[in-house]
Image 1 (cartoon, rainbow, N blue to C red):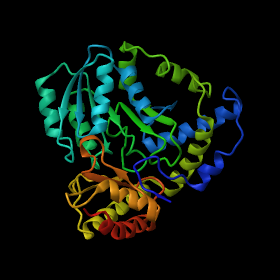
Image 2: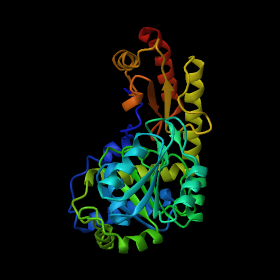
Image 3: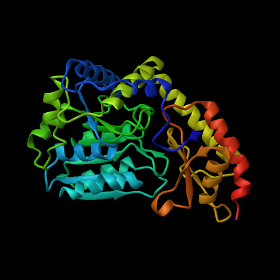
Length: 359
């Protein structure tokens, strides 16, 4: 089976084997060694010298943790969005009574750094900016490097959803002055769902000391205190931790620059292959994601039928569009455990399935 959705992604044999290990005491020496190993390696991939925490949750839990640890009810937030997951980040902040100014962009287009600059000039009391680095729902990667320079020019906090980018697309958290960066285990990290990983800058910690949003399970003060003892505040997903430790070894052995180059090459191969089949891409090449490709359909192509044919006849699983894009696009995930032959298989299956999915 070729699982080519934007997550969960396939797991390498090393991760699957690691998860067969027996349980250990999560308050004992063995787990302390495991979490310390993971944390040290995570910092290398986050490209940070700051704190990084493991949370037993989905990526969305990590986003909620970012909000409640940094902000207070009534804080004014600039939430940028060009798709579903940008909207979700804003929704979470609103649930905790932040005053959210939404800066929305056409789906399929990137967030405009210039628009962020204009919005920050117009509202000096904004405390933080929310950005989704890679918008999975539309196959768009935002120019986080440029966005971060603008956000820091105005001395605002920068909270980043990097769930489907970190570990696949370059994101130097310290160099780009990202205050909180959130990612999830089931994406480029090549392990099952169940862990979120979050980094904190010194400026984020300063904000944390003043933050008044309610938190219990997500409290980073507790997370930091327990990590110093080689523990997590609450029971961790031990089997997934085993797997993550194994895949981090694979990632660091490959090297970050090689990982980024592999994803870029495979993404370009995917886009070129899609165009050769006569299908248009949803995102323009200058902002197209290196982890997921969104493909437009038309009134002659039944997207749902195409997805079903690929699954049932060719053992290829791709993703539909979401919400207002359902039936209008389909998406191919190419992140984590992916090589050129995988995409070749997908493209060959698409070539055979397309005529069968025509109206």
